[in-house]
Image (cartoon, rainbow, N blue to C red):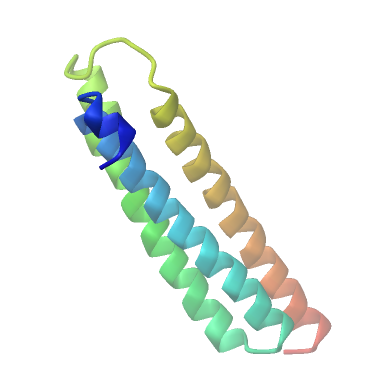
Length: 116
């Protein structure tokens, strides 16, 4: 049993949403890194597939953010307090999305340099 469980701490619904976003963005980031490695090794089909998988994960995380956090916040359903974990989740999602955009460009550069 975790110490936090002994103290009666349980994750709130908002924290569970945030951790789901972090997990999806983290999985996407791992796919992005694998795509860059695949492109570096001339496996452009694999790189494209991995970037597509990453895009789906990021889209799902963004949908969670929009439906479960932003929409409910706008409706007044989440209260007004700032949650550090939610801030981290949103930051992690945003940086993973930017990383995916850059990875697409890098994969295209690898292909162009190699004449593919």
